[in-house]
Image (cartoon, rainbow, N blue to C red):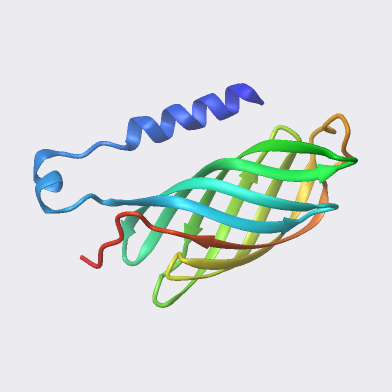
Length: 155
């Protein structure tokens, strides 16, 4: 599973390139931090950093990297997570399909976002393994999140 995370990271890093003309006008990537809440057999606080790019025709692709945090028996548990989101024909409300992966769960989701600032999603997590000290994190999933773009532009 760690090799999948490494390959995804290398893919993202390899595709983040700009030519001189793009650097003069604007960056095609919008990025920033996000925070949210997720329920999937337990309550989690989600913190991540994301990058979003325009695919053309008002469709967008977003990559997330972060952690899900929960507390059980006075102990903090942090679970790393990678996510990929495809926003369909964005206007003000952006419907999306998403795939999130941790070392313990793969969770496909669907949902809606408002200008990539606020989003609500639901999905179903498939168990890959159990983190020591926690019950299996699988089953129905619902999440809500807020994203803060650090370089938002309208052109």
